[in-house]
Image (cartoon, rainbow, N blue to C red):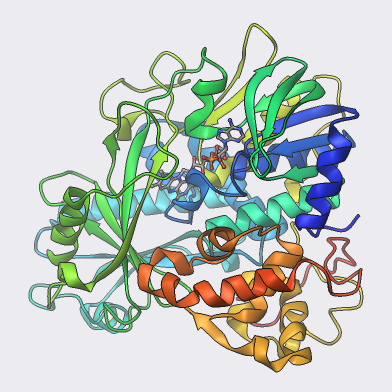
Length: 535
Ligand SMILES: Cc1cc2nc3c(=O)[nH]c(=O)nc-3n(C[C@H](O)[C@H](O)[C@H](O)COP(=O)(O)OP(=O)(O)OC[C@H]3O[C@@H](n4cnc5c(N)ncnc54)[C@H](O)[C@@H]3O)c2cc1C
C-alpha cells in the first residue's frame, strides 16, 4: 500500500473508520503511538491511529534528538534500561532508519574545572558504553569508540572554546536523529504503508476497552470508533484519558543559536554544569547549521499545556553554563529561539526500577505498560530511542494472541531503495536532502526539476519543493504542520514569519499531482546499501 498521507486519504479513511471495527485503536501519534500503529499493522492487524493535533505534535518534537546508547542509565545502575537503549540504537542505525540516524561525535572539553580524576572516571564510563555497543551487536564502523584529543585538535573541532588551561577533550560517539519529528513522520507513513489508517486532527474524548469517542477537530463532528483493543499513547497527556496513570512531567528547555554562532563547530559538546557532579549541558550542532543548547530538568505541576513555554530563567541558566567554557560569551540577543518539552515521567509508584523518588532527572526512564480496569492499555515513560520496543510491548499487552512483532528489522520509509527511483536519483541528490529523505530524496528533487520555482530556498535550507512534498506525502494539513513539524523552520520566529507565504502557497497546490506510484512506497528491493551522501 502507498505510504503517502494527505488530506484526501484522511477524508477517505475517516469515513471508513466510522463503519467498521478495527483490531487496534492507537491514540496519540508521537513516536510511541506511531510505533504502536506500525507494530500492530506489520503483524497484520487492522489499525486506526489518531492524534488530536498532528504527527509529532507533543514531546517527540522537543527532544535533544539523541539516540542514546544508555550510558547514563548504566551509571545509575539501570542495566536493563541501558541494554535496551543500546539494542534499539543499533536497530535504528543498522536496519530501521539508517537514513535518519547516524553516529555523532561529542567532546567533553578538559577545562580547569574538570579534574583529572573526573576525566578518568568519565572515560571509564565511555568505555563501558562502548561495551554496551558490542553487547548490542552494533559494528564499530557505525559507531566509533572513545578517544582523547589534544588541545590543538579540540580547538580545531570547537574553535569557540576558551584555550586557556584547556588540556584537550574526551571524544565519544552516540546516535543522533536528523530530526525527531521527521522520525515520527517516517514511522507513521510506514504504518500507513502497512495499511494503518493514520488520522490527525482527531481527538479522543473518552476511551474504553472497546473503542473511543472521537471528535474531528476540523469539523467538530463527534463519532465513535469501535476497536478490539485500545492503546493510549498520549505521552504526558495520558492521565487525562486513563486516570490510573500518574505522571510527574519534567520540563526540558533548549536554546536555538543561529548558524555560525559558535564558529565552525564540528562536534557536539558536553559542558560540565558548574557545581554539579557528572551533569552536563549539551551543545548540539544541527544539519541546518543551527545549534541547540540544552537541557534543563525542572518538575512541572498543574495542567499540561499543549505547547510548553521555555521560561527566561531556563534561558539564562543555559547561557551561563555555555559561557563558562567559551572564549567570547554568547549573549541573550544571539539566542534566535528556544523550545521546551515535557518528559512523560512516571511517578515513583508506577515507575519500574525507580531508583528513588527525588529529582525528576533521577526518575526512571524505563517505560511502563499499564492495563486499566476497563482494558485500555497505556504505554508511557521511556524515550524516543526506545519507541519501537515500547510499541512492541504495548501491542503484546493489548493483543496477546497476535503474531510476534516484526519491527526490529523493518525499514522505515526512505531507508531502502524504492523501485524505479534508485537508478536515477540518489546519486544526484544533494547530501542534505538525502540526510532528511533517504531514498526519497530523488523524488523530492524531481519536483523542483519539473517546476524550477520549487527549487527556491524558503528558510533554514528548506526548499518550496519540500513543503509541497509534505502536503502530498507527509500528511501536512496546514502551515503549522509545515513550518513546525515537517520542517523546523518555526523554531526561529523570524524565519517562520518569512516562510509563511511559501507554506500557504504549498497548501494551495493541494495534495494532488503526486509523484507516480512506486516512488513513495516502502517496499524494498533491499540490498542494504545506503543512499549516496551518507556515512
Ligand atoms: C526536553 C526533552 C529532551 C529529550 N531528549 C531525548 C533524547 O535526546 N533522546 C531520547 O531518546 N528521548 C528524549 N526525550 C524523551 C522523548 O522525547 C519522549 O520520551 C518521547 O518523545 C515521548 O513520545 P510519546 O509518543 O510517548 O509522546 P508524545 O510525543 O508527547 O505524543 C503524544 C501525542 O498524543 C497526542 N494526544 C494527546 N492527547 C490526545 C487525545 N486526547 N487524543 C488524541 N491524541 C492526543 C498529542 O497531540 C501527541 O502528539 C526527551 C524529552 C524531553 C522533554
